[in-house]
Image (cartoon, rainbow, N blue to C red):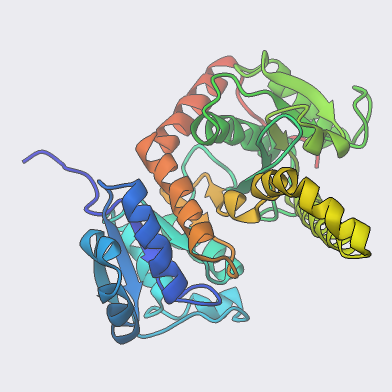
Length: 349
């Protein structure tokens, strides 16, 4: 008999997140409408999840429920999470490792998810370290940023691998045929930065993505949309991400203060409301929910723990894009092409 592939498109950690399982199931209710051919393995406490699932007819049609007696709390250390074999997150990850599902989506503990995924699903043979990537807004459209914290210290090889994975991710998630790539640095000049960054740039210029590589970029280039894929180490990427999130929140708070400061300001708000509504929609963090751990033998997407149903549904969208467009096959192709041009060797770190 021919291999029909995984039984489930995705395994879903029903107990992860601040308002689980209700928000997770509401998100699947939306996802079921967007992806009518998908099948989801929903993992969680059977009593709690089953009752909520029965009230969401679309989700109930596309979900199979598997009981998990334990829940990984948000403050649990990854080492302790590894010992909880009956947790909803662990059982969902086991399903991916066993080939039952092509990927997992969880809004649970980030550290636990990354640790479990790397140990159980494992890194693809071509890749030294996985990277955490996400999509964010810029003046010219959406942009991919990686690594966002999976690897605090990186060498040149890691940065090159991130660039190849980011290229494949941008092709799938953003629909780009030749996404431009930049290395985040302290300046755009070729002599700026340390040895590892300059070595990574040299390799990328001589690789199959050389025509897409734009060299070094600076922090302001992220929101300017200078390139489609921003590559950096996990320490810098996480700082950039949190700084951007803080800036967006500050802007929202300042706008609220300005438009509530006086009667004329409130009248001005009424006149500007259509434009502000468009701005709010464009910058809605739910549109960008769903960070993906790239480079594993399966799709792993982390949803924000405090998101609502729409945000969780978007995380499912990201995972489904990765599955349906064969993301991992694109990564393998990218590394095959890289190896054919130049063999990677560890560089000074």
